Structure formats: structure tokens, C-alpha cells
Length: 194
Image (cartoon, rainbow, N blue to C red; front, top):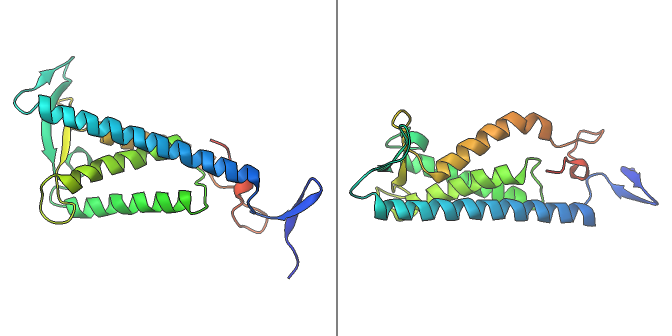
């Protein structure tokens, strides 16, 4: 079988092969993704802890219709899917596993790591609630929600991170496609830097 490669300076390397430069980009991508996810989880869990302490017997009115009001949500984001908490938790867990496998398994997702980190952190934050709050069965606990606009379902910091990043990913995904070589295989060496 003939060697399929491309010329890079004086050396020829196989299409899609790892170089020190792509390895560095992958590590940087993963560090940003992990850092943002950790930040989202920390903010989410700290605000939920505060809400459980401060809002157990009162609401706090802020501005216009915005208030802080404690709710224990057994459904998905914004209270949708009541009674499907285990299914929702398993889907979120699968998402976390896929992103971790893709990122740390030597593949660099061709999407901005900040946005992926926001979605990952939000999923982990809500999964943590489902794992530690009492509920029915595996990952059946309720998620703590407390941001109440009074004209929109009550939500939390994790929900906010997931929705904002999800909308941004939908808007920019067509511009962040993984480049392909002439033979149709992925070529991570030419992926857009995020």
C-alpha cells in the first residue's frame, strides 16, 4: 500500500498524524475544557448550597420579576420530564463519558473548549444533585433550582451554563467542522483553533 502523506518542510508525515504542535493544542484544549467545567461545577454547587441555606423558609425579590425561590426539580432543565429523572441522568452521564472519551482519548473535538466545558460542567453539576439528593432509585434525586423569573420555569447556574453554551454551539457549529483530507478522513492538524 503506498504511503499517503503530505510534505511538511523536509519531512513527510502521514495525514492526521500527531505532531508536538497538535499534541500541545490537544492538551491546551483539554485544560481549558476541564478548567471551565470545574469552574461551572464549583459555581453551581456553591450557589445551590447557599440557596438551600438561605431560601429554605423565604423568597428574595431582586428586580422586576426576578426572585430567588427554592424548588426541588425531579425533571430535566426547567422542570420538563417529571418522572424521568433516571433517564435524564443516564443521558447526562453518557454525554459526560462521550466528551471525556473524545477529549482524553486522543481526539480533539472541533468545537470551542469553553462552550464544551460549560455544557460538561452543567451536566456534572446537575448529576451531582441527582446522585446525592434523596430520590427514587439510581440517580433519582432532585436538582436544586432557585432562579425564578416568575414567567419562566425555575432554574440554576448549571442549567444556565448548559443553555447558553448549547445555543452558542448551535450558532457556531457549522464554522467549527473538523477539516477532512482529500480521502475523506478527519485531519486534526488543520482544525480551527478555538
